[in-house]
Every structure is written in C-alpha cells, then in structure tokens.
Length: 282
Image (tube, rainbow, N blue to C red; front, top):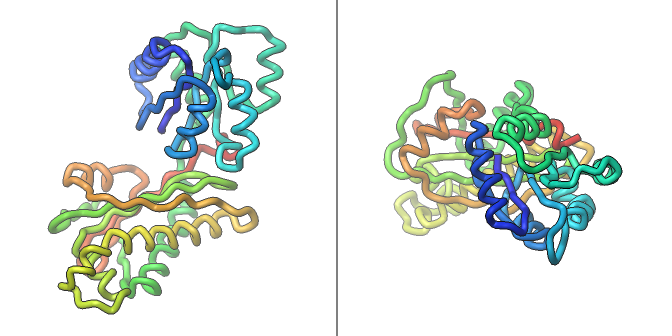
C-alpha cells in the first residue's frame, strides 16, 4: 500500500517511516507532507491508500485536512490514522465521528503501528467472481476494440516475452476503489495500434502509438469492470499511464498473487486487479 505521512516535523516523519519499515508491512511508496494543505495536494496528484497524520500543524491542521478529505468524493473513504501525543477521550470521540479510522499515540513500537494499520486496512483481496468478471470483460474489450482473442493461461505459467514490455496502469475511486494494470510486449502493442489505426505493423507510427493504445484498452476495461462490480454507483477513473517495464519487473508483476495471465497472438499478457480493502470502501 502507498502511505502518506503528514507531520510538520521531518524528524517525526522519518521516525514513523522507519518504524513502519521495521514493522514488516508490505509498503509501496511513502509520500510526505508538512501540513494538511500539502497533503491534499499529494492526494490529488498521487495514488494514496492510507494517511497517517498529526493533529497540530501550521497552515492546515489534521482536523481541517480530515474535513476537506471527507467532502471530496476521491478521498471521502480513504483511511486516516491520527498519530499524535494527544489522548483526550473527547477529542478522540469527536474526530472518530468525523471519519478518523484509528488513533495511535507517539511514541509507538513497530508492532503497535503494524497492528493499527492492519486493523484499518484489513486484507487486500479480490473475490473469485471478480476474477471471472475480469476475464470476461478483458476478453470482450480485446475482441471488439483490438480484434484480438485472449486465451487464459494456467496458474504458474509465466512465458518470457520477446523484446520490450509496456505496462499501463489506471486508478479508480468511488463506490469501489483500486487499480488495474496490464503488461504486454511492445510488439503486441504495436500490432494492436496498427490494426486500430489502419496502419501496417511496421509503420513507425504504430510503434509510437503502441503504449497509448494499451492504455486506452486498459481504460475501457476498467470502466466496464467497475460498472460490472458496482452498477448502481459511479466510479471515477483517473487518466491511465503507460511506461516501459524492465525484465525483472515483468517477472515480479507476473508472480504477484492477483495477476491473471493470457496469451494473445502468441504474446504473453499479464493483467492485475488490486481492490482497496473492504473497510476502506465501507
């Protein structure tokens, strides 16, 4: 998970970061902000799964930041843990009623912060029915949009792609929140772009537009998938991004528990869906 630390003391931020690392939690990017205003800017620009925030800060304190988060649909359900020296029961009750997920007092041990974070985020899990939806929707999009036919591979099969690999990612927030990623060989992205744009596969423009085409396939897949999972409440899709993937990154991506493997025109393709914990979407 990606964590945002909000505290006006860089020493405290460093201490919290080190304690989280020592806790043994699986952590992605740890963002930092010196006050609530800076934190809101980070949340607008970066994918954040969990916020750990102090209360007493200049410019915008933790309570003001929390109020702003709960008024924004993109951050309304984001878990917030208050990290403070304060411990007044009335203060805790007031902030809990306004959407604070948990409260931990400084200082704390790695075991304490691990237990608090796990209590708030629960487990990252994808329902088997969601995997079936992903197979069906990704296959439909590839067939109708890209004129290709994905064949699911058996669990444990991880073919090595020829040449470079492109990875596209998209985040979504709302009734359901999470991220969808797809990794595919650059040659396949080029072929898809050529077919879609009416170009020859060896046309330079097809190669140039390959990554953008993969991102658009992902965007359409994510839109249909979110509607399939939660048809009654809209979900906001953030713009997809695409970048080259190193060989070791491909291997790690394919071996992740939530990754689905396909074969498309003899090219291996990996798709991964990560949903936010249920507690964060409640």
